[in-house]
Length: 590
Image (cartoon, rainbow, N blue to C red):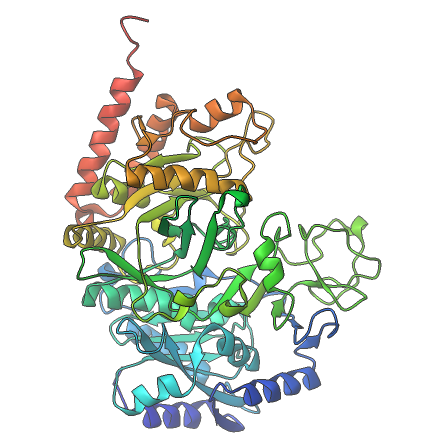
């Protein structure tokens, strides 16, 4: 794939895709308003009630196109071995022969939008630039919220700075000819026959994670599927946290947490809810920026109880995707906290009644909104230097096995904890829901190169840090024998975060278990919380027999990386097996 100048590349695409016209986007408010007006006129954007929901609209995607399609997502590295066993690989030659022809006249009769964008704060050495060419006005409008579109990027491109080249067309929306191809060496992405967010908003998962992870490895930084938040505790200490959870596992809820015990003086500052780019600073710490300027969050179960700050953020200037529509012009989704009114229209545009037994909103319905709309967004959102990270949290959705919280024994062990993370699947991706799968660092669908090399990059980064973050694992979703959650979650999660802060500052003890350090029952602040001693005991329990089965499963997963698996992780795995063996031997003292 030969690199050409920006203007030559745009001209080549236009000549091949044959759009009716070409538009270079500047990202201005006037341009955004004009684009919205055109979409309302053609029916692709439905205005909500403008008194209740000012400047907010509903978009419906094709029913065949409602989530990330991992089976259609490819890493087109020069060598298949560089893609690794967790990625679908396609040779660049095959992509040129099979995928490129699908773009021939694909934009006929449509406008081709050329969107230069900046990922990261202006003036930050950690920021990167890209361009998406698309024939979707929905994509163009969304990127004006999700990224910094316009002169900030175009000026750098004009000055000759390299940029990631993204080419997208909704094409015919034929799912059998749907491809999302990533070229890590060429720093390019092609996406055809999808209009859904994760497949079409190329700066998001495609650039900011798959391409950026490869770029980060080459340049010595990290691109991670992580939220970034700051928590100031009653002692006035601000702890900056990155947390990696798979999609739809509470990442956005935690990023903009409304803490219980607010009267004690807890304060949250939200820097990002999905992606973090991290670099080792001159002080030996990891520093993080959020490359995004907006949020593309899951609506299902978002309510004033689960995420009040998200609900406040959604009171204006929002694009809703695949939500249900009430007769009063308000969006509705399952878990919103109130019953739907009669006359509700389902996400696919059909009339809906409760007795139909189907969701009114798609389980993967989304909101797109500027990050600055978040009530807990702080001044550091645009800070070029980012923030210093004190703690990294891994977590997933596990009904059993994983305790509420535990701390790794150190960085190397923490990388092992992240590498063997397991979560139950959600509706954020196509396929069965509720199936446990290994999802290392929540990056399984997003790592743009061999994951064994990715683990090695984590280990190498830790060695470059003289003050690395502490690494923890959480599981808000553990259930009892009755299938009900044992931990209340949501705002009460601040109690778990406080234990982490106290561990970092040396103010809390950890109880050693084979998998890591857990709080003692007295180590968690449970004042005012209605929860039984039995529930707390179950939440913190580490069952050696159960974890021996987990370890066997994780060992088989790690073995798939063969000779590319770092020796340090093999060592950590055998250390865990040894600790589990010791824990399984009955005490001679009873």
